[in-house]
Length: 228
Ligand SMILES: CC(C)(COP(=O)(O)OP(=O)(O)OC[C@H]1O[C@@H](n2cnc3c(N)ncnc32)[C@H](O)[C@@H]1OP(=O)(O)O)[C@@H](O)C(=O)NCCC(=O)NCCS
Image (cartoon, rainbow, N blue to C red; front, side, top):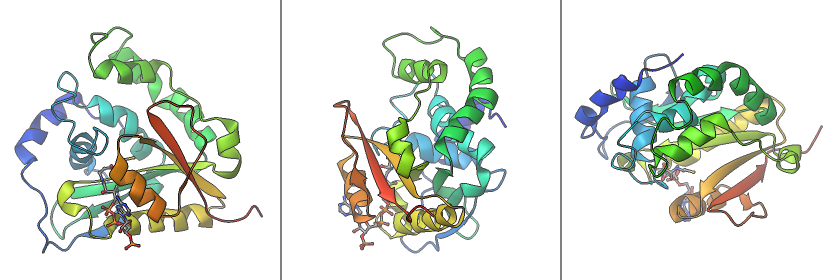
């Protein structure tokens, strides 16, 4: 599934449609049709947890093309959203059970068409999008030493009005249960060192820091169960 970048244009109109404290937000599995709302969540939490709408102005869909849509296309069964009774999703958790297999599947089925749509040099070198275009062409492989005990990985994002209400915990616990039931021994994730709030949340959720390479991104890991 590929979502046209034009579909992001309508996101601006919806930015005010945020949940209030009395909305009955709950978890449900991702379903087709959620993409546009989830892309909005991805963009509005994409600058170290803050709104990235004014950062990725050239290609607002690119962040989702890299960090959201491949999970919906390749591992939709591990995608859970948060939504009100009749409203659009306001948050999500995405997972990959076997990161090495996920990276291989993306190499075969996700990156090639994006490479055609966004060739090297498609955006100016000094634009924020340039980092994403480089990532499309040279997606990093997770080090085997991380994968040994933590083969799964995840992404979680909630719009501001849905934060601080226990929904992040519920999303992660649901994913942990799914991953453990499927045999995973552990999970890892990457987080910007600038995202102090999320790092506090992940620590509260039992994650510990993996020795860092000194870049601006931290790897955090959490065991789910002992090896069988
Ligand atoms: C980070 C995020 C997913 C957390 O979800 P949340 O719903 O706000 O967190 P919860 O309310 O479920 O908190 C769960 C627990 O973490 C704790 N916690 C949350 N933030 C914390 C912090 N900064 N420091 C310490 N503990 C924290 C809570 O106190 C709570 O503890 P408890 O369950 O033992 O009472 C959410 O705030 C978010 O989407 N932020 C913007 C996007 C983002 O940064 N995503 C991560 C990118 S890597």
